[in-house]
Image (cartoon, rainbow, N blue to C red; front, side):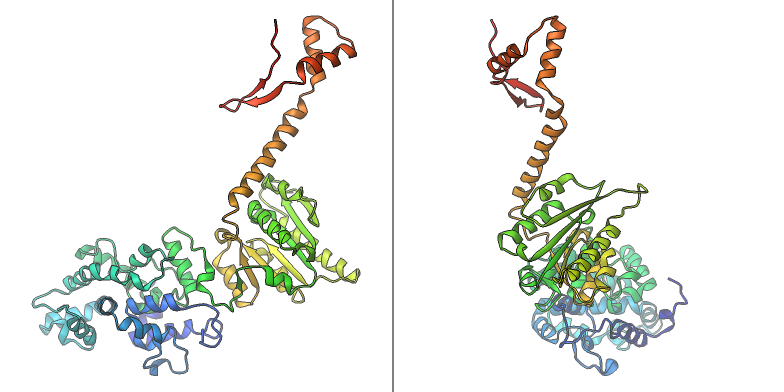
Length: 495
């Protein structure tokens, strides 16, 4: 980031107001009336890391006419707890000490002042709050860089006591890491953190200092829970799965497809085999069939690529499904044609249904690929449900569906109990197919007998061959040794 960026030319109040304004433009603005995503987690994080009271709906003179970003009720709840107050005031101090480091250092060196005598640069209410909660932060002849180390050391015993405010399904170490930098108990470790913060301050949430790797593409990471937690998990090389926990009941995300099917007339299901897990899709189809919802499905389009999984055979063998399977080949090895083929076949089915006088009014897209967004956007007359997988769905696609009120459904955890059964069935079917089609099909008993007779220079007529097979061969079976090798069992005993 350049030293002459617009952000670096603004004073703290102006740059903070500008950042908040950009984060609350109408497209991204969140209000109590139309919120579809929760802000409980981000409100708690905002309190603990010391974000200004005004963003909780208190003293909003600088951001008049803007909806508060965080819940006031959570501010009041955490402010009653000693541990939460201590963490908040320590974080407020650290942000100000880092942000105003040079100015504070000048005051301390030239005017021989301690930090409790510089109210314009150091929040005195934070120092007073710590004092009231039993922590005497200000000490005589303390250097500024030593004060910053003190913040880290005071946080160490108090941050863990705030875990009680976060739900058990959040991985606490990821939250804890926000407060503790590497080598935070040393002056050198804090200097490196201060360098990153100084250079990229505009990218930190409301310019509050945390242990973070800023990225311009993130935007306001504390916009809501649905944005914060996936980014937090990604920073820890993990994936946040259960979006239903961070969205309101009125959100486009649904937990069960039944309501969608009940409220629809005729439905088409389009499956992108390149971007869907076979076992999960098979599980979905079985469940829909068991609940009698398949009766509403006019067609299941299964569009596959020559390079994808053979597990789709298990679905294709189900004769109860109105399924059309289409396999695409590749003109170029690196370029798939599945999305184009699926889109074309989709529109043909819609047109044919209209021509037949039985129009399709709803569609299920089973794919995590955002390439199908134009199909959804350009077909407003069709009601869509998109079935996604957590691991393969980008945050941008999730947000696009969310913003346009397109229903979506995560299939990952819907069949956790039946995953083993589904996998077992898929593997068993493929093993049987492999043995029968690729091995047993090549084995012809008459050819084997003829080769044996030829080697021995003997002859048998047809009656003798039939009698030989019935008496000696028919009782034998093929088994498998521990190493996987095929072996003959029940072999006749020869004299």
